[in-house]
Length: 259
Image 1 (cartoon, rainbow, N blue to C red):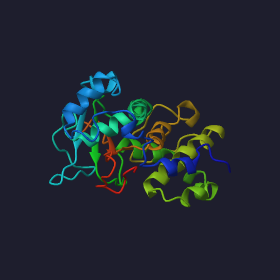
Image 2: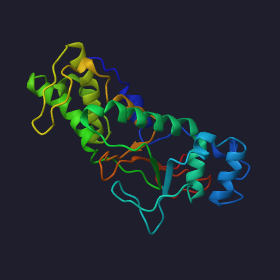
Image 3: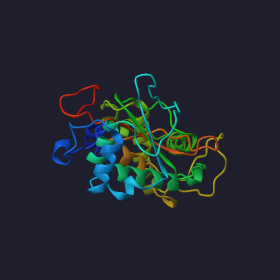
Image 4: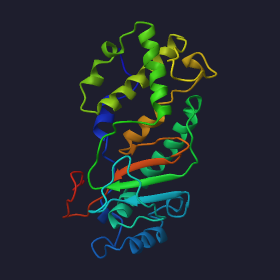
């Protein structure tokens, strides 16, 4: 069966933002490692868009040698990145960063039947090395369960329908979301009714065709090269996006330098 998603394009872009070479747009690169100076320079020249530079709903956390970042770590959040490599990463792919943020907010909107709690604040985390997701918040898990349990109930083997998903090197939990994404289209086309796992509260829709595919924005984030590790709960209602630093030419501190 043909997939709606270009799985090979997702595999190529996963954890790999499409960034410009820094030397093509900043005269400061190589002359300073002061994040504030670089931020002000790029903002003044509109290389760092105003939407990124001045939106105070956004916060940043940068990994340090003494404070490594993992999905559950919650170091202090800052109004600006305090590492110039994070500033370079933002400026080198501002279009992709803003698109990932829009996709994250759209994801929250589409997850509403599964009860996400989100206050619209975005926190960006920057690390030297990428790491793969092992868990998503309850609302994303429940949305995926709604699809996969419905297929189980109708005795439809989704693994055999899309064997190319298992042939990728994408993390298993990402493969599962891709299956749910593709399964949503099939369930909508076949007018399947939702099978409700017993641990999910009853929600006010029956057919998959009643709602837009909730996994599409998440896949958009991955295709942009970024990662999302949200809880979307009362205890943690923030949108949490993750990226690697952009290392300047001649430096390679993590396994994902573009040079």
